[in-house]
Image 1 (tube, helix red, strand yellow):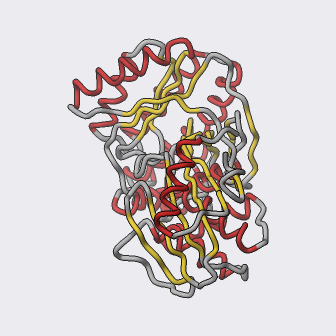
Image 2 (cartoon, rainbow, N blue to C red):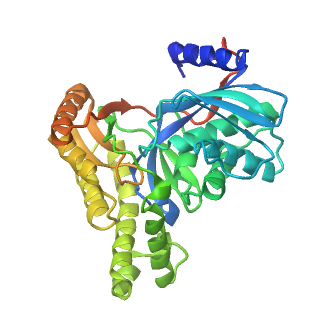
Length: 391
């Protein structure tokens, strides 16, 4: 894939200034946007996901110590941790995503070495596009290259999920890390979170995926994400199943009245959303515009009234997207509670769509949104051993 030389030069200059020598290793990992399947992953359901060209780069150099020293260009921050430490970093919470990966690798008996690194990400932070997973998977790829061993992409994804669950403290499903490690350039992924199988699929020509960032940041560790997961697990248990994926529509219809009202709403959304994943995958492959419009509308309606993860910013953005020229359909992305949303747009009208959405949303909220099309990108990878190879 083509890499931005201006970005590479910025990272290289910062590395030399910060650490006194050039980097000799470059790695990257993409963010992602879910096209359908909100909150279905931790219920072992299906998700239609897209690894995006917005990604995290790390330039690194082994430092022959047991310390990882990092500079974040996005945050303008320097931070470090000892590989043998186990605690979290109170001063730099973002460092926990890196430290957690190092801990999990060592728990699995893999050798890790200290390094100096500069991080730069084009995945907007706390926006629902998996900036944390992109960082985790890029870091795992750095440790992999420095250690002289190699993980299978799925093994790497599971390890990075474990780092976020156990060290960072976010009880996320596999979606983000799977997409960041398993991405294929030019393809969406239809992921089955029960058996971790996936199928690459092309989106019909003429349809573009456009990210619409509300600029309303979200924070999973401080949101209602954990409560939603607990409600789903309660519903599955009361329905006699290990996970909501195992609940049939007929079984739910027969027993929904036995559930607490809020739990029943959460379960209904997950069951309906899981079914929509497969239907949308088929519609995107064939380009069936009416089906895309209806499915995305149903997903957002369920997110608002059944799963209750919408916010005023999301409602304002939905109104702006649906009023813009070229829109086929639009819905929430990520966990909700703010952040980014996603639109399916006629390719010839992407520019007009973006202009209209910016104007409409700014007028409604006094906030300048970010609107940009994305394409499917490759998963976590090493992109060069030195500056020349990274060009």
